[in-house]
View 1 (cartoon, rainbow, N blue to C red):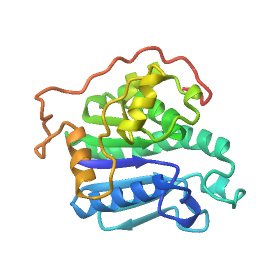
View 2 (tube, rainbow, N blue to C red; view 1 turned 90 degrees about the horizontal axis):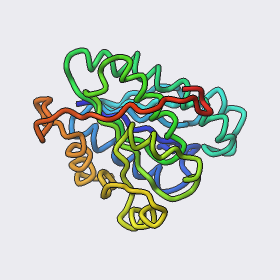
View 3 (cartoon, rainbow, N blue to C red; view 1 turned 30 degrees about the horizontal axis):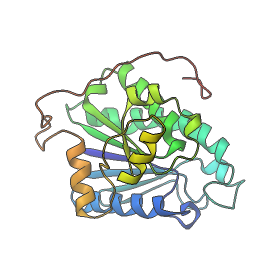
View 4 (tube, rainbow, N blue to C red; view 1 turned 45 degrees about the horizontal axis):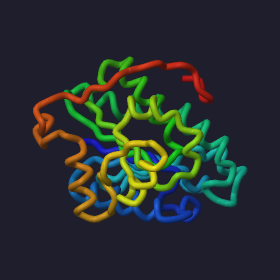
Length: 229
């Protein structure tokens, strides 16, 4: 089983702006310590190497060429970073990391955080389908707050990923907006968070879904959006 966490925030001081950084950093470290190959893809410090490995934990600092012009932190220049993250990260992730893993019949879980990763999720879902390996990958997208909700194509996102929330309170807020989300699936950075992340994949250690089925979804319309996919 391979885990990939997609988040703007991450462990670098440059990428820390709130609770998301602490959660994804703790979760990625705990997953790696539990023996899972874990990749954290975040908008990191442009002065630090783009890829670092610590045992089973792989840190991928994305958008560094943009971040060097925006020294104030992860959300400085966020529009340009979001465009680059959404357009360039999914093809690289699929080609360099996912496909070599999936071609052996293995499975992977994508855990994506917040509105900045929505277009990356849509792009990756499309690429996985085109490659014929979508059923081997579970994608979850997690809502932390309602900021920029009006920018999200909820129908497309629901077809591409399982939508979860950071808390039952957020689930309640989303229901009030007419949006449906599952219970918090992988909040927390300790062993409980790891257990939820593993259960959410629906795949046992032997590579078979625990409910005896394969994940499926509706491809739906793939009309062009801002990032062109």
